[in-house]
Image (cartoon, rainbow, N blue to C red; front, side, top):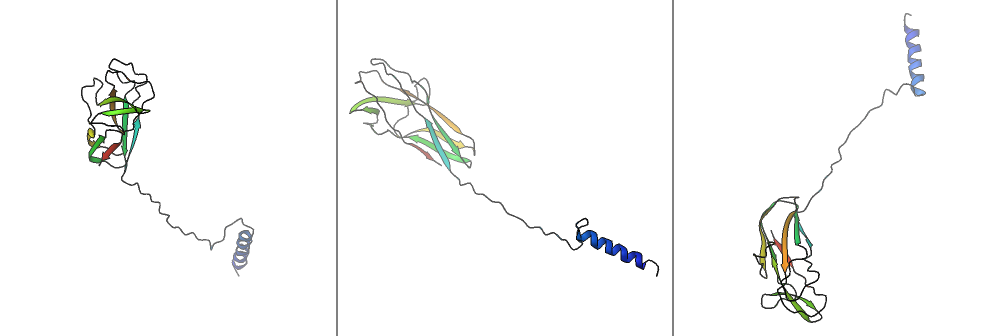
Length: 165
């Protein structure tokens, strides 16, 4: 008979251990699969701004900007040729930007330099060139109100910034 009773006994012990969970079943198998993950980022640009705030204007003298304004542009893809322009605002008259308060107007100019040497005309370009993907482009602007007498009030205007890319 040899090893037949021993082999039979080992088989029964293996089966018993498998039933009670000590040894895993010999028939277990695994399968794998893939889960694809995708996303799309549209080729776009966004514009945000920091206002030009003249604060309190002293009549009779030129005023410097109370704070520099800023245009920030962020694009999702590199734009090799862009142009940024600013219109004349809601109260423009004969090419002069004007803020309004209760029917009264206060003229103002926008410049691309703190020395007020480079005036930006109505519809004028404040930036031309490339914009790198995912890097914010900042364009500083400076305002100036000409000397004059102005009626008391809270003056404002809204300018439209256009980005062509």
